[in-house]
Length: 240
Image 1 (cartoon, helix red, strand yellow):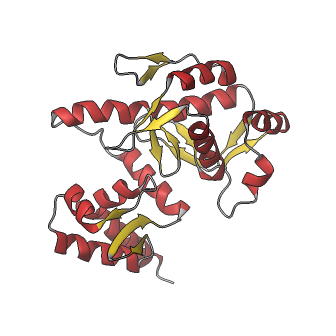
Image 2: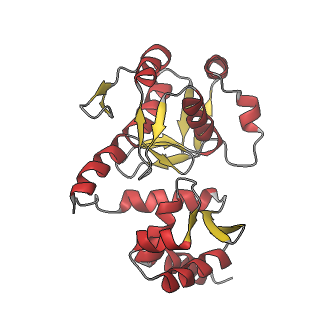
């Protein structure tokens, strides 16, 4: 078996700047038409279509037909999501090139989605707090819920037994690309994110992967997690 060729194929797909931009755009779990992905990547629609064909042939991207429209989304592939986040962590910090960047980048750093779980300062702070309170423990293979932690999650509204039965990794480590620390991914990360949405603790941005903590969320972090979160003038969480 020629392992080198297998690595090269994946590296080649990720190495193209336009394809990388499209994969990152889809990494929050959204579905987008080719025209929007072309705009994000800064390329012509026919070129974007060629890139999307390669990604769908590799089963990294899934296309769904809704009437006469076609929408693309990232495939359910934990390794791909982790690879995108890990490569982001290895990259240089993004540069502010416009007024829009100066607004979006700080909010992404504060809190955002990494496919279907929380990342940024919010995500790593939650992981750090759960570790300190021994609700979860961590080793090189991921996060694990302690016996007391199972009861804690139950009181929070997350059934760990149900989460463990999903057909995906339970709680792999994600290296956060802005904080250079770990946040919780996988089924457990998705369950925490879903619960935050159900409780209206966070709201999603329309223009990016950023999420903002609501006043209710700030109170919830204090009462449930013991995290005191300081808000900046835009209402986005800044520091603890």
